[in-house]
Every structure is written in C-alpha cells, then in structure tokens.
Length: 64
Image (cartoon, rainbow, N blue to C red; front, side):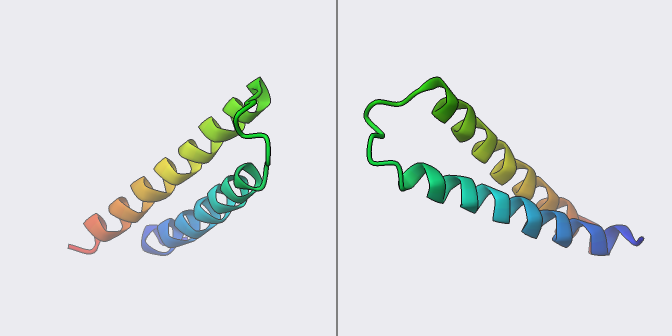
C-alpha cells in the first residue's frame, strides 16, 4: 500500500475513535466526580487526536 494513501485512513480512524471517546466523556453528567477510568479515557482520547494530527502532518509533508 502506498504511504500517501495510508496516512489519511489513519487520520480518519483515529479521529473517529477520539470523537467517540470525547462524546462518551461529555455525556457523563458527573464530570465533577471524575474517576480513574475517566482519566484513562481522556488520556486515550488525547493520544488518538495527537496521532491523528501527526498522520495528517506526515501526509501533507510527503506531498512536497
């Protein structure tokens, strides 16, 4: 598979997982009473968005 085609797919998959986790966190009415599992979910969401941004940058850097 071509690298130019792989990175947009990675971007969209990671963005999808990040948005789904973020929506699950925001739907929690007891956000003030945050638990350990919620912290882990937030860290995972941040990792998904971070990796998506990196794949997006790598994709556009390779176009030059």
